[in-house]
Amino acid sequence: MGAHPQLQRRLSTTDATIIGLGSMLGAGVFVVFGPAAALAGNMLAVSVLLAGAVAYCNAVASAALAARYPTSGGTYVYGRERLGPWPGFIAGWGFVTGKTASCAAMALTFGNYMAPGYAVPVAVAAVVALTGVNLLGITRTALVTRILLAVVLATLAFVAAAALTGPHPSGAGIAAAGASDGGAAAPGGVLTAAGLMFFAFAGYARIATLGEEVKDPARSIPRAILAALAAAFAIYLGLGLLLQNHLRDGLLAASRTPLLDAVLHSRLADGAPLVQAGAAAACLGALLALITGVGRTTLAMARERDLPSPLARVGVRHRVPFAAELAVAAVVILLLLSVDVMTVVGFSSFGVLVYYAVANAAAFTLDRHPGYAPKWLNAAGFLGCLLLALTLPPASLATMAAVLAAGVAGRWLVLRFRR
Image (cartoon, rainbow, N blue to C red; front, side):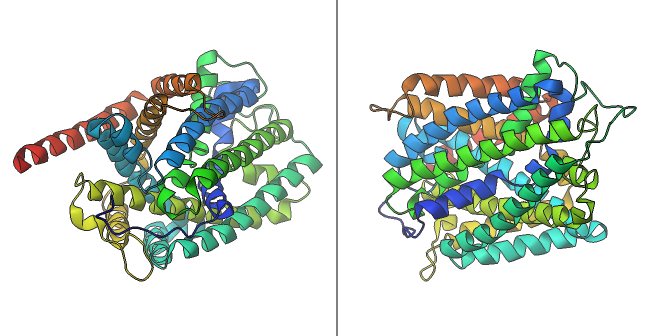
């Protein structure tokens, strides 16, 4: 790794925690509770707990590995170091392709919130602007994330106040797909809801991908990952319980915008525009962290020539992987302009689970395991990823399997050509 230009360690533990929390409190927190309640019924809290347990297993595996290998790339690097080039490549390829599609979907969601009639141009403008922020240096990324996260947290606090003050409307007569949020749910529904909740706060991997830019990484990265996950878990569980109590009798399960509906059905209904602004800020915060994480993984893969080596270029002034950042932005914009990104983003869920499965397998091979990440927890995390993968729609599984197969075939051909 020493032959490549290195990034600079400019992020504190607080900065890394904020970037991780900003990734987890994206647009998902504004929409996930409705479909999760429709699937889990009155066991919504159980789904949150299950998702949190799997997320914890994955988070501590990432934390232990990041402390051991404090460089850019996250599980791509850990897989290569602990399991070999092919597992590392599969993790990196799944992350880069899946999360690039997620970037496009997040940008389009922001566009739909801000200007529904001009969603694509607004989404493209957001990608350009946030890429510009990233190119100014990682400290600028952390500063903008801090501002956006403050807006999101203020919005969530306002929604919680609205849900507490009531009045609590009845949803009688509203048809909801699956179980109502006041009724029982099948175990399969609880597991599927847990899968939805898991993907809503799985952004802690962004901290690990920034391992080369965090001060005192062996100490700071584990603390940042665990702090961000604990905060996100408390927020999701608390909001879930409040919304279930406030939007009763199927109203939560039928809602596509549960946080907005919670405010509209309260004495604080005049504050609905604040929720819309908070959702837009959450989209931008998650998009900023996504672009940053994909760029760093792209950098790591280019260093090992698993992606074109020019993508490993690092700027002299701001010490950012400008070539990787620009390439990611270009692909995201191309997706926005050429395809319906909402129809292809589903496969990213499978890519994320592959990514974390490799992380758990890599952590399992460590000679020493910190107290917060015993070996058995790595095995539990690996099995948890497989279990959640089985709950995904078959189309998502098939699409990501094809993407992974294309990446494997491409790498095999390149290796043969080099020989």
